[in-house]
Amino acid sequence: MSAGVALFVFIGSFFILSMVCRMPVAHGLGGASLLVFICCNLNTVTVGQAAFNSLDSFTFLAIPFFIYAGTLMEHSGISKALIDWIRGIIGRVRGSLGIICTLASMAFGVLTGSAMATISAIGKIMAPEMEKNHYPPEYTSAMLAATSFLGILIPPSVPGIMYALSAGQKISDVWMVTIGPAIIFGVGYIVWNYIRIGRREDPASLPPKQSGGEYLTNLGRSTVNAIPALLMPIIIYGCIYGGICTPTEAGALSAVYGIVYWFVARVFLKKKMSATFWKVAAISGASTAAIGLLNAYAGVAGKALTLAGVSSFLSNLVINNISSKFGFLLLVNILFLFMGTFMDINATILIMTPLLLPIAQSYGITPIHFGAITLVNLCVGFMTPPFAAGIFVSTKITGATFGATVKEIWPFIIVGLIAIIITTACPAYLMFFVNLFG
Image (cartoon, rainbow, N blue to C red; front, side):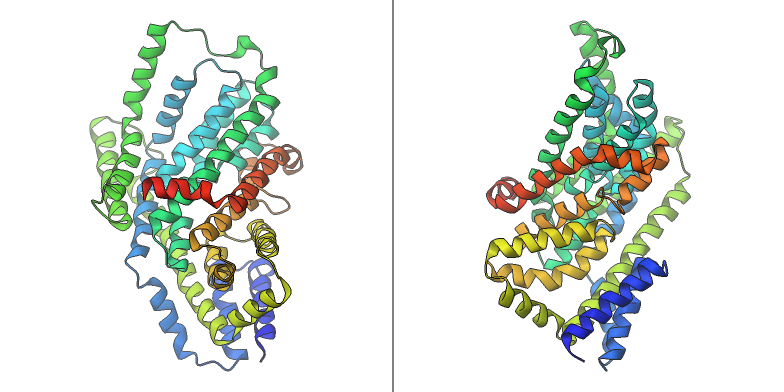
């Protein structure tokens, strides 16, 4: 069987299994990979070897540690403390709730690195507050969908780890390269929030005026309450960039810190948690198992496509038909943006990175820059109709309709397209943060 037909079999069967038959993404990926092995008469002994090799990595251990630590923080009430702290800093600013939603999503992403966890934790707190202050529910829904993935761009990030594993790059470099785009998203969202809501907001609806002493007192109180949340990034970044430990070991430290904080808050401070300790373990274990299974099947898929000659086929196809670096970058951006609208971000990274990265390098694009392009496009796809997983989740939280939310999401998508253009065209801007913390 030719490589082109093998690629068609893989894509077609994966689409049918995942989208039509509603099979979980990991199993759809595994089924499509096995079909390629069978149709191309490949030796199936390598299936088990490829799956095992995908998981036999010290770096991969960082994923369950960060997921567990993030789940502990999510269910321990830490998101409310973060929001109160940011609210204390901002004070009386028009459109302040929209600003708080954006900054809180970025801050909470540092703890979880998960778009779904962020949209759930921040949305449940911010949506009622925004409703009280007369924010349209469809706008609130759009903002939650647009800000939820900022945690993927602010390290630590599980998709960042997945890309680093696929591309053979340092996790810390992949994490740092997306900080620049995250700043563009944050600034763009805050500007649009002022245009859409802030300039029309009634000053009477803002928090009461405070004297300088009252402001500092309230800020000090909220800062003390937020210290447990603020210590998490200090532990992670301080240990990694201080040369004390690797990202995997920092993940283990963050998990230990999360356990200690949980028991201190539960036993001594008598805080009410939104889930039991064992339920948190079950949630994080299920998430880790899903990602592990996806990673194992992605290794099988990569082996199948390599043995079928698909990698070489795609390289020759692109090089023979696209004569410029600009044309390749345009193609990659469109492809990843499209795939991000309906495919799981981790699955897309694991499937496409081994196929497209060698071609990108032939055009002089570094693996770190290509990683930024990949992650930013997939994040924008997370809020882009018609599939838009972020919108489906946010509408359940706010009660807004899908159609009304789509009308409000377009300015946020425009900000995302600007971020994509800058990410693609200005690698020096991205590498500034890598070199700063490298």
